[in-house]
Image (cartoon, rainbow, N blue to C red; front, side, top):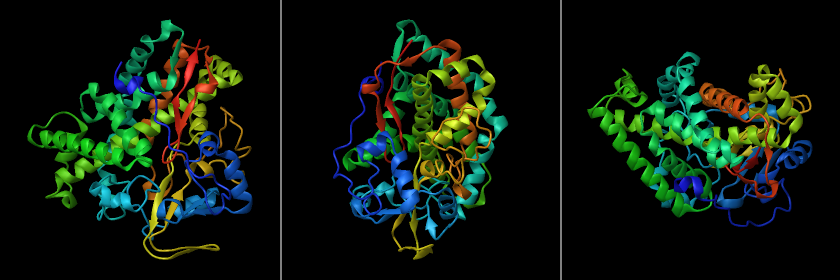
Length: 418
């Protein structure tokens, strides 16, 4: 196994305890990472727009569905042209010059506002249309079987490290035309940027620089030697706004597809396996009735929504009783919104046959995730193949389950046996 498969996740350093979640919330609080539902419930009923001054930037966090959706639509007053990590201290910008983002092209379209967001999104949408994504089903199914072949006879595995974590990087590598052997290196870079890098600026800088050097070399190679892959297709597109900066634009898009397409989906797959491994009734029900798989996937996405994004106020923004000052951040708390009882019946109960489920797991508004079809396919295939091969399973040691928090929440160690 590679280092990425054998190294235990790095735990975040202890933070000052939260005494008042309305005025001093902390996404790295250990209890919040393990179970944020009680915090959202308390805030939603008393102070739906919490704030914090931790890490040097006043940051707001809505918890109601309607508020999150409305705030996500306030573009460009609440801008996406900001580093992907949500509450970095100001000194990170000085340490990491790669975060300089005047035009939002370092991870477009998610890191851009119109007009850059509009034309870069149009560039990638054809590759993530349902029909285009369906062409990758066979590759994903074969991959999932190959992964399970490695541990099925052992009777146990770490379902996060050996399975969920291994699927998205290989699918993304296949899509972009990268060497599939790079998958574990992608995991290391992504964790270094989004997870460890959340509290370790040196690790973030190191991984960002290594990753960007790799992407630049790959894109330059496709520029000189086109292939039958997505990078080459992007470079060949007739997009007037891209002229003269093709390499920069495509490096930024690749940055987004790898960073956003790996951690989020492996967290969702791992969370789903956590649920079925700890809930025998739902596991047996899905094993017996596989027609429930599509609605089960949507319910896993709603309940365990992994991603919290951010916007930065470009001017003072009045919203309800709150004034968000220029330069302050607003967290797009999609996970919390998906547990609002005003939007979902019994939101804190998992119903794998839930049919009314217009969740915000993929965001809202013009920055809604363009890769949602691919994420759904990966989840559906990953769970379907697992249930084909290992229909009876359970958590092996709940005490050793670990979760990552911050920008992306999901299980990082998930011991399972059968």
